[in-house]
Image (tube, rainbow, N blue to C red; front, side, top):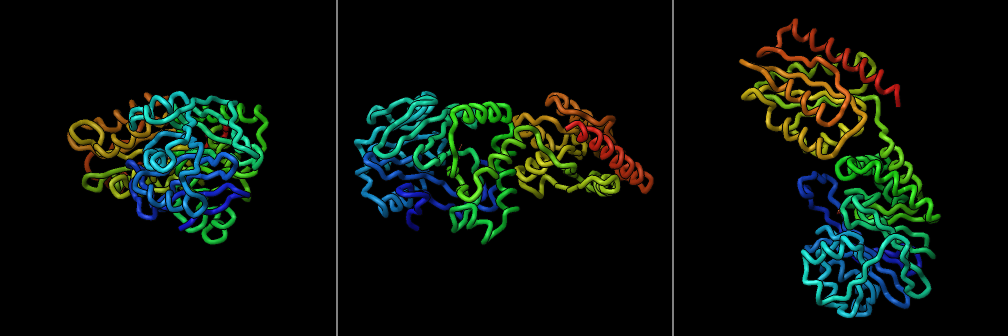
Length: 404
Ligand code: FEO
C-alpha cells in the first residue's frame, strides 16, 4: 500500500483491515479501514492516526510522501483506540510536533498515554490553524459520538475530515465513492452507511441535527467528506449528508423485522404465519433469529423499519436471554418513532411477553397490545391466530407510519 492523494497535497495514509469481523462486539462482515490524512504544507500536518496494530502501515504510507520527522502538527479528532493508539509511535518519529485536540480529548488522551512528554493545544469550534497556504478550521462534535469528538475542515480544499461521522465499515481496495459504486454498488455503500448509523449514531439524532445546523451557520462549502472509516465521499458528498438528515429525522421504511429466538422451535413456528400475515397486509417483513445473526444486523434491521416484532420464549418466567440482551442493547441506542409488539410460546407460567412490553415502554416506544402467547406448541388453529396477529400488527404499523 501507499498514500493516496485526495486533492493537491492532501493524502490518505491509513490502513485497510480486511480481517476484522468483530469490532468491539459490532459485526463487520465487510471489514473496515482506519483512515488518516496527511496535509503537505509549510507545516506538515497529520490528522488522526490508526489502530495500534496498523501503526507500521500508516508510518510506511506517510513515508511514501514525506519523512515523518518533518510533521509539525498532529490533529487528534477522536481518542478512541481505533484512531489514536498509534500516536506514541508517530510522536517518536515526530517528537517536536504539536498536538491539536479538544478539551475532552486532552483529558481522555492522558488516560491512554503519558502526555506530559508532548505539547498539546486545546482547540474549540471556530478555532483555526494556519499551516501555510491552507487553514484548518476545527468543529467540535461532542457525543457524535464521544465527548471528545471533533472534525477538521481544510478551508482552501473544501474538505471535511469528518472522523467517525459519515463513515462506514467497509474494507476496499478503492478509496472513493465513485470508484466503489463502479466496482461494488451504490446499494452496498448505502447499506453500510445505515448499518454504521444504526449501531453507532442512533442515540444522537437530535445532536446530529443541531450540529448540522451549526455547521450550516459556519457556511462551510463542502466538496469532499473524508471520514476515518471506509469510503471517501468525493463524487457526491451531498448523498451522505442527505442520508444523515433523513435518518436524524427518524426516516424508516414501511417494513417489520421479526427478531426472535426459540428454545424448542415453538416461538420459531409462530414467526412464520405472523410473517405471512404481515406480508399479506402489504408490509415488507424479514425474520431474524438472534442466535443465528450478529446483534448489529438485528439492530440495523430494526432501525430501517417502522415496526418491529420481538419473539421470545419464556425461560424461568422471564425473557429468553438473547432477546433480553437485544432489548437491553437497543435501549442503550435510545430508539424513537417505532411500533413494537411481542409474541412467544411458554410452558408453565409465562412472563416473557409481559417483560418485553415493559422494556418497550421503558424505551418510550409505541406498542401494539396485547401481545400473543401460545402454550407449548402452536396448533393449526394457533397458526391462524398468529397470522391474524401479524396482519393486525402490520395494520397498526401502516397507521403509525402515515404520521411521518
Ligand atoms: Fe472509529 Fe469512535 O471510533
